[in-house]
Structures are given as structure tokens and as C-alpha cells.
Length: 353
Image (cartoon, rainbow, N blue to C red):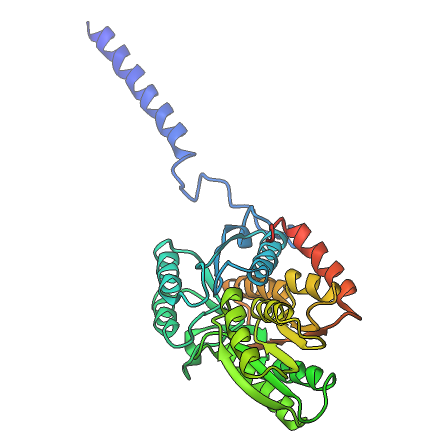
């Protein structure tokens, strides 16, 4: 019995020793574990946009003024191209109308609640969206503004702004109209929502240029960026001023509405110029209807919005204000401009119209 007990005791001691030896390799003990491999200078860092790490983990929400026109779908195209190039997830959303700031505010709040990494915002109402920007700041989320600035002096609410210098762009549109007319000719301006800074600036720049050239601005009327409303506004202006010589609109949808009213009134030689350079406007110019459009770079705007958001998330410094150039489209250059835009939209996979 004693021999059996002794044998059992010896077996138990051997088993305990064996288990201890095996456990030593997994315990993290510095004396038994292998040293960690050192990073060598030959290691390959993740490529920019590599979804396996770094930028690939980011989710960015782009909130447009609306998603009801070619212009904002081109912004969407640029944002999605940037997402593909940089390997980040990009969500593009927007209300059904540029006048719907309440929906935009809700979209900002939803993005924060969904814990996205950054927000790119084209604010459709510069004052009411200030509170939304404050919410973004309080959440510690980077905010990139595109297309329109906020009505605030607190530039800590956003990381950077990418967009058109609208006063100067409006001036170029006004000068283009003046080049087609004679001093003393009557012109009218159809503009977007009253109080919306981008439309204020586009109208102001064009008005000054046209008045400096000796043109008479007989009306400045809002149509809230809506083509149907612009038709009615233009009809009323034509009725009051049957000798009108030009319409300038602060977006292309309103310019198309103005042209529709001009055609219905059977007026000849009336210059109609819009703003944005949308596909519908380019079609109209190519068909000899609209005279021109001050073309922004919405694809570049969307692309740079996302690109800047990624740079900020990666700890890089970006320029606070990043203006984009415009091109005044006419029958002379619209075909070439269009071909370049079409190629980028096709690459993005966004459907227009």
C-alpha cells in the first residue's frame, strides 16, 4: 500500500512539473517568452486608401444642401470617387429641397449618433445650421464645410471650407451678360432662397458687374432654387418688362425656368445665364437655348471635401479656406467641358437625372 501511495505521489509530482513547464511558455513571463519582433525599416506601410487599416476604417457622411438636382449629384460623384481612391466609406445624403434646413439638422444629429468619423456639410441655411455645427464640435467630430459658409465668426466650429468664391463668380456671370448687351438694356436677377449666403453673394456680384456696365437691373426676385417657381417669377417680370434683354439666375434650374418663360412669350434674343454648370444647363446651351452658365466644380468640391476629412483624421494640417475656380460656359466651350465631367461621373457610378 505504501509503495502504491509513493508511486502515485511521484506520478502526481511529475505531472505537476510537466504542466508548469507547458504553462510557462504562455504566461508572458519575460524569461520564457520569445522577444517581440522589432519593426524594420523594410516593412511596408499600409498604402493610402488601404481598407485593411488606417484610412480604410473611416466612415464619412456627406450632407448636401439637397439631392434634387444634377449639381448635388455631381458633388455626390466627387465624394464617392474620393471614397474609392482613399479607401473610406462615404455616405452621401441630403433633403429633397434646399429650403429644408430642419431635415439637414436632423441628418447632422443622426450622423453624430451613428458615430461617423467625420462630416462634410453643405449648409442650406447659414444661420440655423450653426447650432448643428456646434453639436458636431461638442462630439469631437471633424467638420468640413463645402459650397457654403456658416453665418458665424467662430471658425473653430469647422476644420476647413472648400467652395466657390461666389461674389467673384457672380461678377464673371454679370460681365458675360454685359458683353452680350448694350448700355441701358434691362436685365433681371432670379435668385435662390432669401438669406442663403451663396445666393446673396452670386446675386450681389452679378448685380454690381451689370450695373457697372450700364445695364438696368429692373428686378431681383427669389424662386428658391426651383425651376417651376422660376417660370412663374420670370413670367411676371416679362409681363412688367416686355423689353427685358437678359435673365441671370443664381442656379441653373432657375435659369432653365427663366428660359422656359422666355420661349413661351416668344421673345427673341434674350440672354439667359445660370450658375452651376449642370448637365441640363449644358444640354440647353448646346441646343442654343440658354446662353451660358457659370460652372462650378461640384465634382472637385465633393472630392476635396472627403479628401480633407481624411487628412484631418490622419492628423494632417489643411488650409482653412480652399477656393475653387469657375468656368463661364457658352456654346464655344460647353462640349469640351462636358466630356471631362461625364468621364468623372461615369467613373463614380452615380446616376444623374
